[in-house]
Image 1 (cartoon, rainbow, N blue to C red):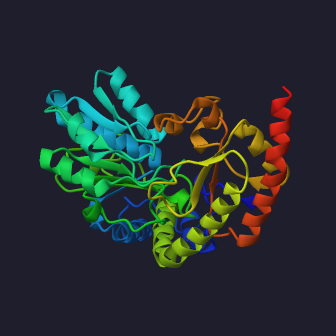
Image 2 (cartoon, one colour):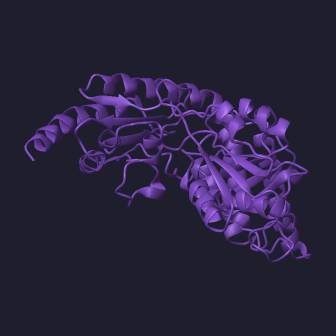
Image 3 (cartoon, rainbow, N blue to C red):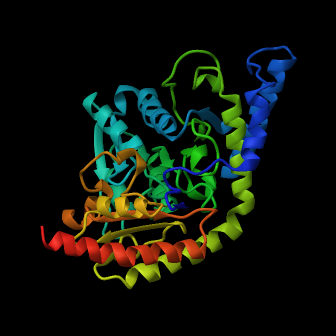
Length: 381
């Protein structure tokens, strides 16, 4: 099998599993218990908190553990809107956000929150001046993702945060696809809230975090016990949190070499794709994370390409894993002004630690056969 869908999820790293195993078996204590078994679990959670904080340039007390990216995004949006009260009932998000943000914004809109969807240009980037123009006296929060999960395009967060900070409005970023692929520092980006999840960086599914800058207004979405500074009730997923910490630590070690290795493979893939007729690579004119290529094959349905690749043991995606069952073209590409028929032909290739040059060449050889054949079929139907 050739796996080129690392933006959907990643395999659990051996070192991460090794770190988790004690907390799946003999170290089963509840971190809120005072006896030795509970204290050992609490120590593991707090060590992971220290590691997670270091990974994003924060302090341990600024990290809230959650069940993953979707919960963290919900806590950021709903938590800030809930804390700001009736005087601040306006939210700004970009048109290319992950559905964890977009659908939360839409749900808030149905509950009476005013939402502005900031557009992107043909490159897939937000213009910071559009954020400036969208700000209102009652704006409670701005949420702009760090790296797009489909195109890999990086957003100009530092420029956006300079605007939001001057206006006194908190800035949230969904950094799920950025962590482990580019250096992440909450102060350099100027963000007040940041979402991360473990399973995109060779950690376990079901563990994530939300960084919260001190002074950011926030109320819990899940109410219950005192856990996570009262912002996320419920007994902590100790093994998952330990796995998240281990994955973040390993990502930091591998980042410099892995980023350059993936960039070379990414360039190899795109040079090969450009040799095929009717291929458009989306977001190529903007800064992108090194592992992601989103290409449309004109005149062909992207799902057909995926199915034919699957028959050869090659895993790729038509876009976000969260929208696999959605027959509509990518909302990201439509927001970038891509014609719907071309957007329907999009395939995402996302590379990772096990990707090799030989694998890239095998995928390109397969596409060189699949694409012309599908075009011939399409032209006769």
